[in-house]
Amino acid sequence: MRLGVNIDHVATVRNARGGAHPDPVRAAEAALAAGADGIVAHLREDRRHIRDADAELLAERFRDRLNFEMAATDEMVRIAQRLRPRAACLVPERRQELTTEGGLDAARLYDRLAPVVDALRARDIRVSLFIEADERQVNAAELLGAQAVELHTGVWCEAAADEKHHRRADKLLGRLREAAAEAGRRGLEVHAGHGLDYRTAGAVAAIPEVLELNIGHFVIGEAVFVGLGEAITRMKSAMLAGRGL
Image (cartoon, rainbow, N blue to C red):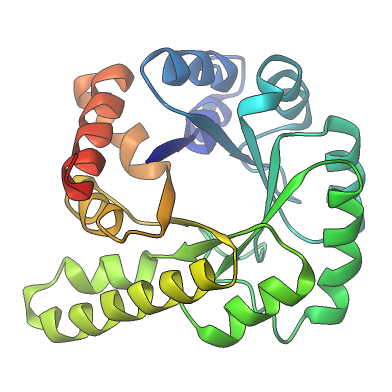
C-alpha cells in the first residue's frame, strides 16, 4: 500500500498571507522523510494554491515521486510535458468549486481526453484518471490507454460519516469494491482518494486491488495538532491495519 500526500493546502495557508511560509516544497521533503511514498500537487488554472514556481521545484527535486494533478487543458499538457513528473492524474476542474467535486466523465469526454493521454504517455508520464466508481468510466479509462484509475471516495466518505446513512454508505462502498475489481481485471492499477481520514482510509485499503491512497486535506489538517510526521505515520498504520498487514 502506497500513500501519496497532497500538499496543496500547505500552499493554501501560505497564499492566505503571501510570502514564502509555509513552504509546500519543504512539506514535501518532510512528508517523504516521514514515510510518504509520493507527493501529489494540483496546479490549478487559477493557481489558488500550488504555483508554477512550486511545480518547477517539486519536479526538479522529487520528479520520481511526483503525481501531478491537472485538468485536461492545452496549458497543463504543455507544463506536464516540460516538467515530466512520474505520474499525471487527470481531474475535472471548475473555478467555482472549493475542491474537486467529482470524478472525470471519461466516457463522455473520450475524444477530448484521448490526445491528452497520448501526449503525456509520449513523454513517459504515467497517466491516471480520477473517476467515479462506475464500470463505464473504468471501461473508458482502459480504452483511452490510461495506466491507472483513481476512484473518487468523497461521496462515500460523506455518507460514512453520518450514522443515518449507513445503508447508503454500505452501497457506495460496494460500488468502490466492484469498480476496483473491474479495473484490476482490465489491467489498470487502482488508486483511491478524496475525503479520506484514518477510519475510511483503512476501509478502502482493505479492497485488494487498491494499491495507492492519495490524501491531502485530512493529513495536513491533522498536522496542525500532531505534526506532519506523526499524521503520516498514523495514516500509514491505518492503511496497513485495513489491509491486514
